[in-house]
Amino acid sequence: MRKALWIIGLLVMVLGPAGPAAHAQDRHEDLLRQFSAYRSTLERWPIKRQAPATPLPLDLEKATNWAAAKSSVPGTAYDLLRRNAFVVFDQGRQDRVEKFYDSLKHQGLPLFITSDSVLHLYHVQFDETLASVEEDQFFNLLTTFSEKMADESLQRYREAFDQANPTSIRARITEEESRPLRRSVESLRRCTAYFWVAHKLLAHDAEPNAEVPDAVRDIVAQELDLIEAHAGFAKSPIFTYDEDYSQYVPRGHYTRSDRLKKYFRAMMWFGRMTFLAKGRTEAMPDALVSDEEARIQTLAAFEIMEMLPAVKMKVPLPFPDEGNYRRRIRPTEDTTAQAVWERIYAVTAYYVGFADDLTSIEYRQALGTLAIEKSMGLSALVAHRWFELQKAIAGLRTPEIYSGLGNMEGPPPQIATEADWTKHSRPRRACV
Image 1 (cartoon, one colour):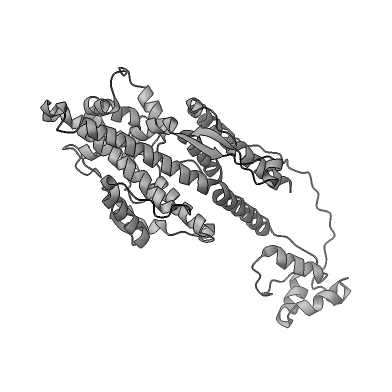
Image 2: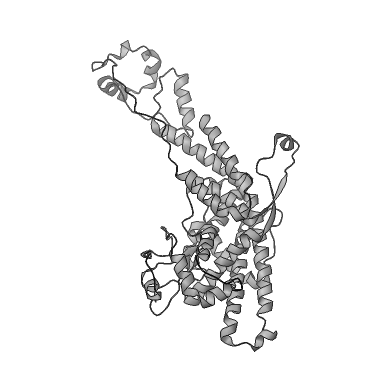
């Protein structure tokens, strides 16, 4: 019971109000310190084994509970028990381990609780608490998150599209000058599609037929068809590299309800689809995407980084006070998409580990290492300081899992030239 109370206490801590987005990095580092801490409370006990040895073979009739146990021991096991003082035999199947121990207790048999039983019950508790939080709390949070991020991405895409419209005064600029604008438009279109896929996968009960914007309708539909078919590897219409769509089949506790199935697919989408920062060049012809595609995806990753703390959301508090709970009143709080994602990420990181890909917080760190003029936007940064940006990203941690992205050697920390980058580095990846 003490352990159960401790776990619920942790969930209250990580599910509570996330605080200002400006302190995202501090909270991330605090999570690392908390989850990596190791506390040892057990010491070696000076036990002397003093139980008297029982001579073998046993005289089972002298056992105090033999009359009660005899009917439970099959004849083939009787001789083994007599000769070895223990025996293992099949006593039927139980779908719950505690029911098995309870049945032995009612038969008057002594209990020998093995360590695997304790670990199994701990795993059940682990699974049940995670499923409860995901279905009751995170499903709604993730649905609102994906909707608001999709709306913000679409708005920014339309603004960028209007700026790059050839009928405007910008039609007089050169092809080279217009490329950053067109790249910005495409990156924001990808962001819009990225969040709309998640939004459609969640398919909130209140709006299952939400209409996808024309600009991304086709590629969103193609992604959803591939996820629904879950037939294996195919080229992603949004990200252009191969993805293993068989991974989107719900499993484990995620098969229990429609909500959990939807949540699983959406989180799998956010967790697997990554924004690559390295593209094909003459020096590196085997990269997964073209150099231009890598620029678009990297720009999209930085666009998401900027949107997260800017997008405002109103979400229900995770644990309303008892009075409001009895009256079915769910108080809300004003927060940001960054804070909502961190709330989900904190619990997910505790249960299943930190993200393998680079996060928006780490991309912000990479950006902070560059001396950038305030007037220089993200599109200009990708256009004119591309190698510096790649180098800054290469200085961050490397991913360890490549489910479908290959298995290349990681970049050494001493990368100093563009030739070093193209020769040594493996695909750099970013997630939400």
